[in-house]
Image 1 (spheres, one colour):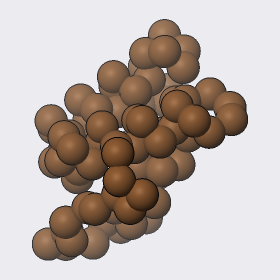
Image 2 (tube, helix red, strand yellow; image 1 turned 30 degrees about the vertical axis):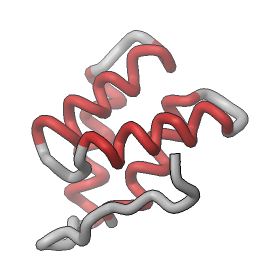
Image 3 (cartoon, one colour; image 1 turned 135 degrees about the vertical axis):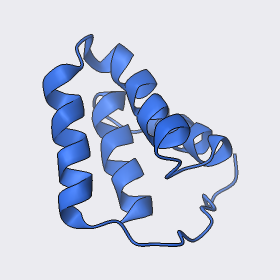
Image 4 (cartoon, one colour; image 1 turned 180 degrees about the vertical axis):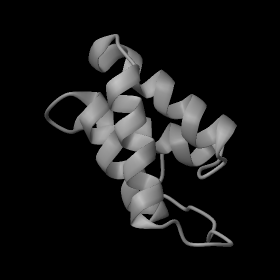
Length: 84
């Protein structure tokens, strides 16, 4: 894993409300705790919306394994940081 996570620039910037509604929907409808959330995030961000590519998401997951706290919260924070 490199020290810097490269995320190609997005063609369009996501609005705050779009990101808010995506995370609200995920938080309200997806269950399974911190173990299941990264899988839901991957399906939403990499496969469905294509906000991140596979390599960037894998780097985010690897980084979040070293941070204190639940990995799902860290993935949420880190993922939203790279696409806003």
